Image (cartoon, rainbow, N blue to C red; front, side, top):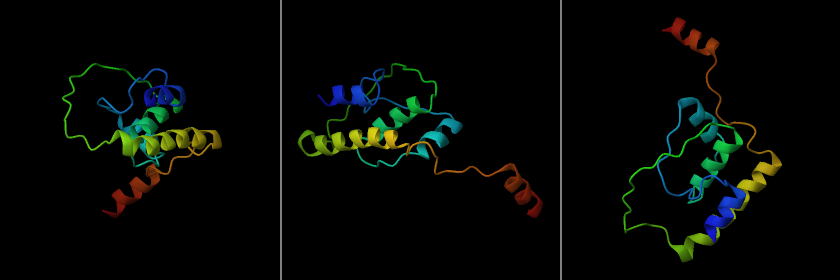
Length: 118
């Protein structure tokens, strides 16, 4: 059920936001991760959502994943908070809260001034 909700609210293309390895270019990393606010288990869902929302290209590449039996995820304890976070992602998007990045890369002028000072 959780996967279906995530699929509806986050991405129809990425069927399991929690599994898999995610790699990003430096520019994509700055743009995506400067906008993330979730630090719980739905963090991956927010990253996938922002990848789509910011129109970054992505590819799904199969990898071999070794599943650790000692997962810290508890279906009973974590499902409701994760669902709440997934809904919050959509609410933030509707409010336009993902439009402005909190990270601002140094300008070329700042870099030039640093080089002159050194």
